Amino acid sequence: MIFGDFFKSLAQLSDRRFRLVLWKGVGLSFLLLFGIYVVFVTGINWFVPESVTLPWVGNITVLKSIFSWASILLMILLSMFLMIPVASAFTGFFLDEVAEAVEDKHYPQLPPAPKMPFADTVVDTVNFLGLIVGLNIVGLVVFPFFGPLAPIMFLGLNGFLLGREYFQMAAMRRLGRVQGRALMSKNRGEIWIAGALMALPLLIPFVNLFVPVLAAATFTHMFQRLRP
Image (tube, rainbow, N blue to C red):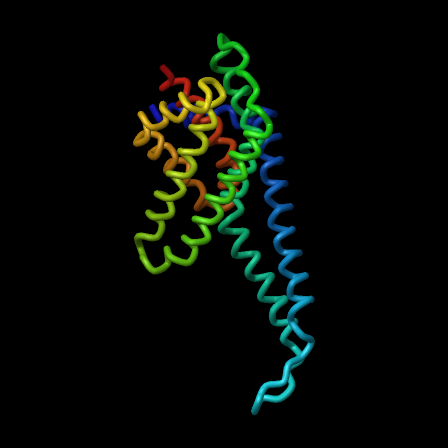
């Protein structure tokens, strides 16, 4: 049944509303990562001196250039590792657009869902952004020490985070916060497995850009299947 939810979402990927959400999420993620880079480079310009003098070495004048190039390599690495988690978080702002497209096509009998208060959406999205970025940064440091288990740990962590967030968002649209979390708790194992399925494409460049939209659509289908 999880695969049925996924393949129905995959078949709808050409939907114009899906594409709009994709570009919004990716665009905002690039802006955030670029903003972090600008802040980092500004900090280098402010705090790294033009030159330093070291005992037995003498005057070093390339320190700022070294830090600048290192910052570029660091941001490339962080972008590769954090782009999708950040895009996933930003997609939370536009979940209604994906869910409505899914419901219009597959569940036309449903009444319109009540709009989530914008403040609640912002709080939930910011919390998810902090959680997923923070844990993935920790994973970036820790996972390499586990060798061949690192990909499994990556899938397990991001599967849990994606499943938890996207199912909760889909459920809260129709049931509210309390009932939505109760339904999620009742189906936690299946939701985690579906999240791990969503996390698999994270390892494939370019394909991973579609993960946030596919996850939002897949968990909308799953919610409709599991709802009381």
